[in-house]
Length: 181
Image 1: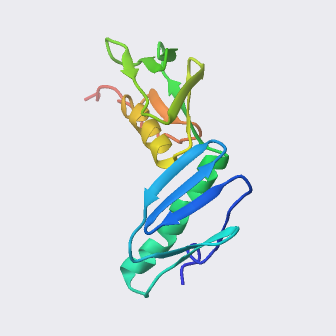
Image 2 (image 1 turned 180 degrees about the horizontal axis):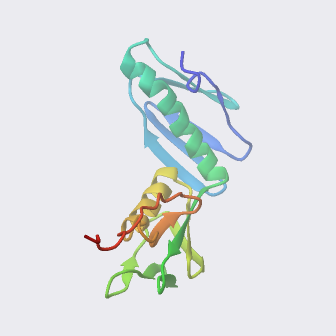
């Protein structure tokens, strides 16, 4: 039995979970999320808990069991607390700023890079070297942060680029110089 999948999900007060066939809707104080679930996984919505069960011990069912439970739990956490990813920019002259709802970044390119966040995701710039991505959908927040990081990922020689807060970048030694013969 899956250690993650067998745990019941508690529904906090103020959150409404509705199951219609294999379509689940979660509504809370921060918004609402919807998702289609795999037809072979059984989800039961009780008064204050949600349980996930699998029909057999086949590898597919075992994989889907924990995944389905975590997806539903992330929906409940998202509509109550929300999710945040923070990025930091390293490099001389590298900076970020907001232009309305769009993020404008001066990176290692000759032109500013402009990123428009997807619907449901908010991007903030608390200071020029920090970017905060927030939203209720964990997948959308993570994808938006990955998209921003992909504009200039950290390079291993000087460490310049965009990285997640707390991310370790393994540094390489540069050239040792010309060989003396």
